[in-house]
Length: 242
Image (cartoon, rainbow, N blue to C red; front, side, top):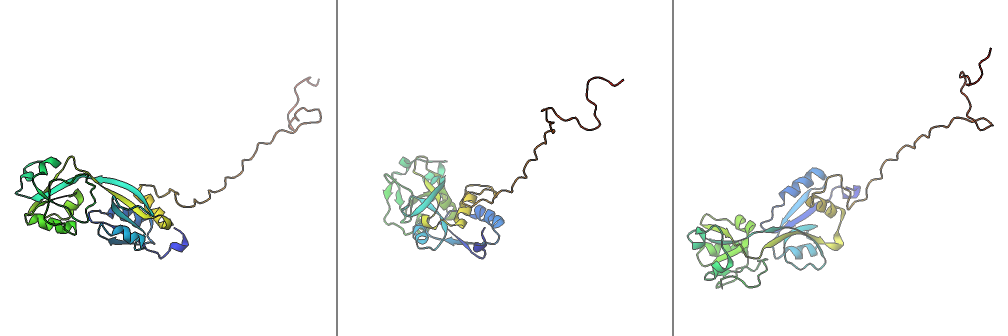
């Protein structure tokens, strides 16, 4: 961290279902002088928030408009179907999209799963949010397909969920405005990618200490004839004095 960053705050946005705690914990250990402000934001609004400068970086669900944004895909989530506990699906361990053909399926406006063909029959309304859709499922008016983390987030005692084996999956990514790739953003990227505290990527590495010059061994002095001089006290080999 440079001196100019002292007193700054790193603003991290995240969409429902994403838990940034492990990365924030590592940040707090490494960057105690730069606190993190967490900004919870609906899935449909995170990109606009980043472009408007409301956060330095954010966790979002792909796909979204990447224009002007840098993106690092992180992990893929299992898609599950949320149903009332007395629904026939609840008796199975897992289902396929075809198993839902006769059901009315809610499609929330904040849904980020890319469907070529949506499963089942369209429900009577499109809820504004996944949370609203879960409430309608609890009322027994349809079912809902969501990433597993959202099913856990909006869990209710009267609902359950099952994996849908052949459904498209949602992917979580770290994203930030490309033209605002600050040193703090680089530091957070390093944490998310699991770099060690000594990694210098994104930073100007400190100059390594200069190694002391090696002392060259002195060659024995030579006399004018080109022969090595004999150290004092040592006699030459040859004739012995009589």
